[in-house]
Length: 346
Image (cartoon, rainbow, N blue to C red; front, side, top):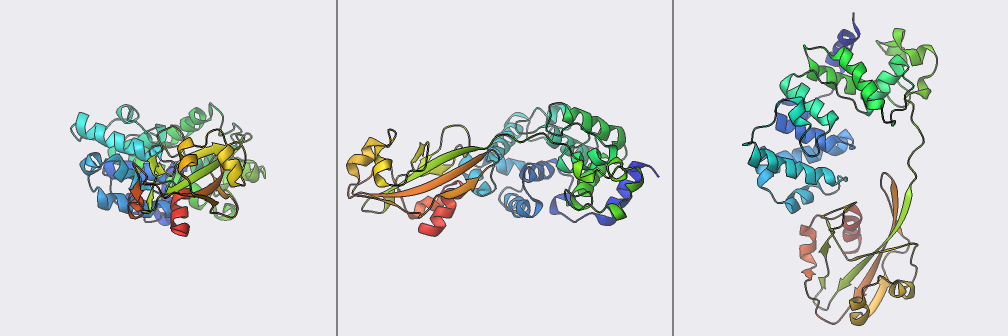
């Protein structure tokens, strides 16, 4: 029995039932793949259902506003995925007549769609033999073949994609891709893989050389950057707040927040806050009271950043212009640290 035959047999007996596996509709496949990027399955499923309920067809998503899409995405992280999802829906709806591209080459041209997502849609929806390479596939193939190329090196994708392409075949490419990812997720796991019951154990290089823990090979991680955020929770006598869209590029672009002052270290007192050169002068003149709301900085970890966040309450008896009511704040799409703050202090 060939590698591919063994894999498909295993998949037929062990695959999990997921909502997105019930359809080959490219819109649903695309939506699920974008949501599941860098997201655990159990976390992504409620969002997939939420998006399908709100936008059952691509045209519905295209006609929504970006703010509505970001609000629905709130809490899932990596918000560029949501912005690209919305942009691409509008592009397909307005420029392609609502017809999803049906070739790998045209799919990969879509904004927010890389080789992985294009391969998934091409194989599952259109039966095109394009191999998917994700973390599960890297791990499985690196162990089976003993591939020592670091998976985060520049040429890793090309090497692993070629290996997978040699095995995918023309008959069931979508099933093959899902089986590869499922095997890595359930059987050839990062820790304590089920080698004793593995159908590939006889020819697995890592197992036979007792090097399971050595694969996949990965070079040292990117240095983690620490940043210090100070949110200024400014309100007036009517309980209206200054709330603004984060326009600068980077994390949380186009989400809403209280005015942000970033510092080079933790600011521990009202005096150090107001003395900061970037503290808005208008808040200095109108403020009646300034108080640190959290007793210790909120720690928020991102892929290559660690944020230490403080929330400063600033109250004034003057009427604030361009402000929003306390109740309306909940209608905006906000970063998770703001959402957690609202739940705790509002």
